[in-house]
Length: 148
Image 1: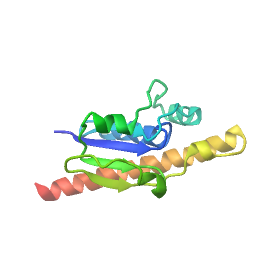
Image 2: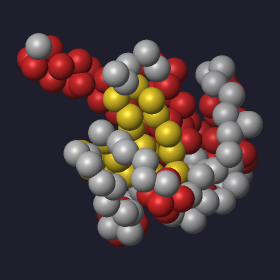
Image 3: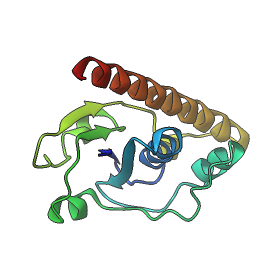
Image 4: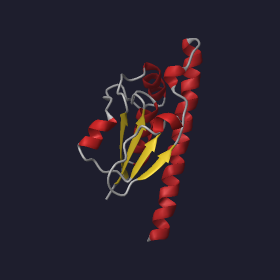
């Protein structure tokens, strides 16, 4: 059975979308990743662009509301917030045995400067999220190894 993971941020427009895409790409045989936001917005075009650079197309993704998932009674083994601590506290507590993790990343929507400067900062966030996902997969493998 696959492990279900929900990534949550404010608008489900950037960080949570990247985390979902990376987990599904790198370990989709073991995980089902979804993402949602507290106030769903529109996909951040900078994020779409930097993900396309590494051949991951999220341009057709929809943004989702975390409260909609909660009301549907969805169950997750992990709920991982990728926003700041103050925003994280607004997330609902999902029923069932759920581990909550917090991975705070800078919000690409807050970046200022030229288009190239904003792209460069968004790439840093993208690469940090990918590294965190790779570490999460590694730790999950180690935990499962010791529970066998």
